[in-house]
Image (cartoon, rainbow, N blue to C red; front, top):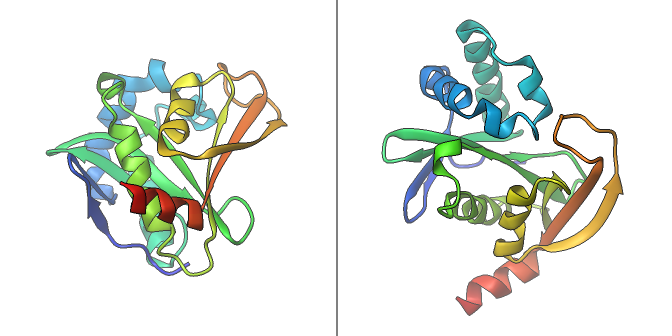
Length: 188
């Protein structure tokens, strides 16, 4: 994967590569939203982590992005960090998966749909990417609303081990093809 741009803007949001300097803001967002996102994100079982460990993790993310790998972007509303969104190589070589979480105080306003749209468009700037996916547990209705609003199709349901306390163990796997995304963009 070629390196994604360091930042992109939507109508209301700035999405940009996180750096260790963002640790205080991201750490605060995670602490404020722990009860909201812990049921769905297995890595939240390790929270809270130290500031030094989070900065080290963010340095790793930054290096992966510089090397053309996964990209983890902070979502900023004006100057406030309100979540993260990433593009991950977790599936077939012609596909990227979007992962995300949003601060509990900023849900229900379309921010994640806006960020997901921008990340889908960015994903299709990558050579050889023909599909973008979003996966979530069936019980996580809020996460499922995002791909539905973006025009992704529910491609499959997969039984998987339960990794987080709110999960049912059925993963919904949504996809959109390059052609379908282009057609949707042309229609708007």
